[in-house]
Image (cartoon, rainbow, N blue to C red):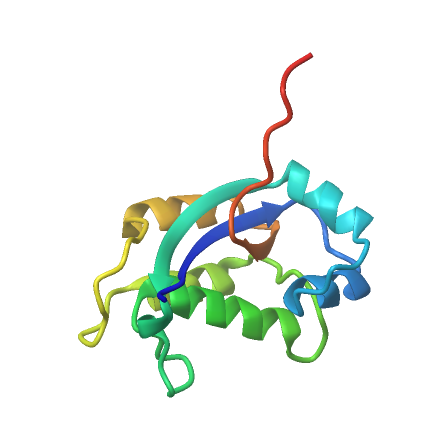
Length: 141
């Protein structure tokens, strides 16, 4: 059986408390009221998808852009302290560079380079989290 993963970037407007960021990155089913509110207020961009064959044994060498972006944000969100990394110019440039195709990449669905650069630039100063999909939009009353 092949599992397919999807990656969305969530640009949240405020920092996430460390305990709630820890729950997010460790996939814990714990109450996260601040994180939940931030995700409802977030802007989202679809980055791409992959399956198990895209994983690599070598650190930071996932075989498609979405895996590399997920891995980098996981690293930035968990090393030193649990957080939603601040999207500054340095992180934007790192993510744009990580997104570039590499010779060993396998075919995979991916956002176009200009679109990811535009999303990241438009959201400088926000905090980034990875999501499998945006939250459902509640029906209008």
